Image (cartoon, rainbow, N blue to C red):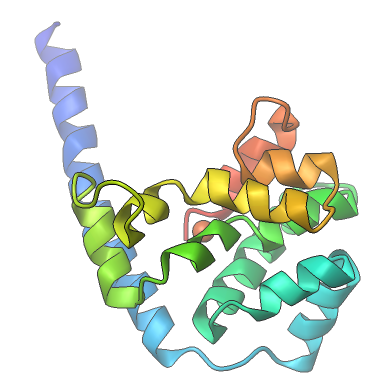
Amino acid sequence: MTDLRRAGSRRRGWARARFLPAHLVRRFWWAVTARPLGPVASSFVSSNLLPAERELFERMSASDQRHHVQVACRFVNGFSAAAPREWVAGALLHDIGKLSCGLGTFRRVIATLTPVVGRGDGPFARYRRHEAIGASLLLAVGSEATTVALVGHWPEAPVEAACALDRADEV
Ligand SMILES: [Fe+2]
């Protein structure tokens, strides 16, 4: 590796190291100050989710609901044309598998910062498998295949939608 490339990867490492805590602090603040969705956001959710998907959405905390609406709005705004409903549903439910871990905000921060904590089928282990768990939940309620693939990060998910979702989730 040349000195230039080494310096570049060091800079990227610093950028990541600074990004992670700020990102978590923002999410933590977001979680403790969240209020229930307003009528515009609720209508956006209802118009993009099937009734059974909406029931899953309602099981999330107010802060999680707000995060999902924010990500879905960023996702929709990333396309010049209207995104298909089943893609938007994937954005609105992208972290639905975290429901099963039962971790509060503080323990989620710990789970993110310490990826080796937790084993077996405990809450931390389930947190790390939330994508697969989310896909199972959506399969069980009859979601469209594309929605399931997006939430589960399956290779069948449309690349354009999967990339847009990753970008939208960087909040
Ligand atoms: Fe997310």
